[in-house]
Length: 180
Image 1 (cartoon, rainbow, N blue to C red):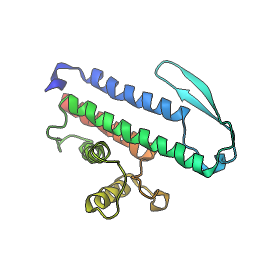
Image 2 (cartoon, rainbow, N blue to C red):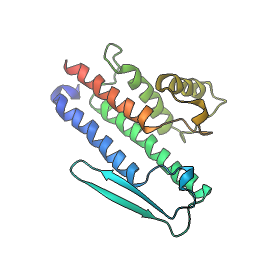
Image 3 (spheres, helix red, strand yellow):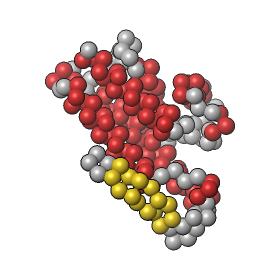
Image 4 (cartoon, rainbow, N blue to C red):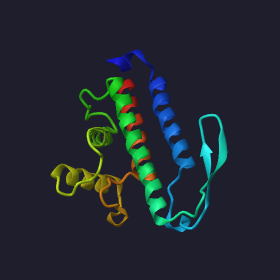
């Protein structure tokens, strides 16, 4: 196993590093709410590993609902991709062959694998006619307490606070279990 040749701290740092990179990018290109429609500027605070800064995103015309949908779609794409990268990292170090159901956090690692498979091997869209997709969506709703009213048609819900951060934290717990 590759993980045996690395310290727990090294691997946890790698997990945290990709989390920080992802959220730095997501803060710079943040979620656009309905209240942002009509704006020409969006400000945000970007926090990196060693620095933080304020950013201002300027548009040459007012944000409309189409622009909002397009930018939020790009954000969803980034959220899908960080999950692919996170799974690839823990897979590379040998933590997933097989997933150890005796380790804390394993359930979220299993969900992560299903999401990675969906996002890496297809367009990543939710299809209500596919039983596998329906089952995964229900698992996300149940596990992460997602409100069905917040679902976006054709998308798996990936809110940062409920899904992304929870999966990152669970992966760290899971990895730590190998060093216990």
